[in-house]
Amino acid sequence: MSLEVPYGYVGKKSPASASQRQSGKIETFKANQVQEELAAFRLAHKSSDQDFAPTSLHHTLGTGPNQAASGADLTRHYDESYRRIGTTKRETGSASVTGTELVIDTVTVMLAIGHNFEIFWDSQWQTSVADGQIRCRIREDSVTGTTLQLRQAHGVGVVAQAKGLTLFADYEAVAEGEKTFVGTAIRQSGTGTWTSPATAVDPTFLKVYHSHLAMH
Figure 1 (cartoon, helix red, strand yellow):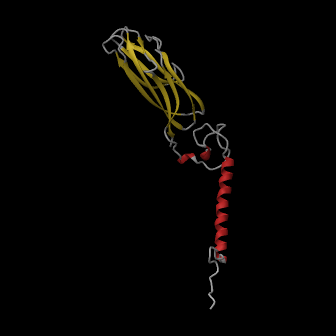
Figure 2 (figure 1 turned 120 degrees about the vertical axis):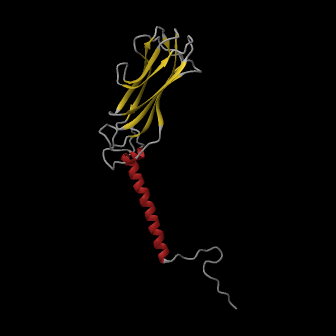
Figure 3 (figure 1 turned 180 degrees about the horizontal axis):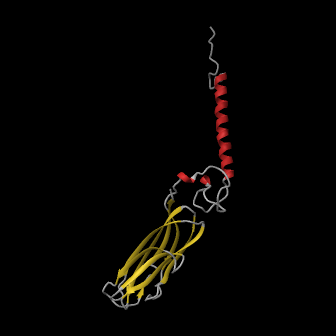
């Protein structure tokens, strides 16, 4: 008696049907098409940029040299994660402050037009005479620049005892490129000389964070 063994027995695969072969070709074509489109997209957007849109979302907003020449406006609905873009760390005491406003700390960063930024200044102050007030500002550019935020601190009643003072400011970039922010101070009242002490283990900071793309 003969025994009929099905084709493909002992490790052999059954031959694929015509419909299976056609389906496999379609799936392979789709996969290849996706890879080709992705490669073309990467090639079109391979130039590095400094405008806070990642390369894969190289945007078309604005007219700066780092803008993509063509393509969809991808950043209108894109909100980049919060991140720090610049820091000045001071580990030595500041100049003496009396009745003339002085720049105490400075930070310069690259900004992208239409994006929002946060400036954070963390400092401490002490006076030679336990009276009066110190007025601190975050300004654009220089000691005469636009004030973005201001706060005042009183003498703490003990000579040379430091008092912390922290300022925050929001800023929407209206131009592309480098931008400087400064922390300034002036004695508002009293007779003492004010200074901002700092050391390696007790530094002051002036930081800038990229907040998000402004939505209007």
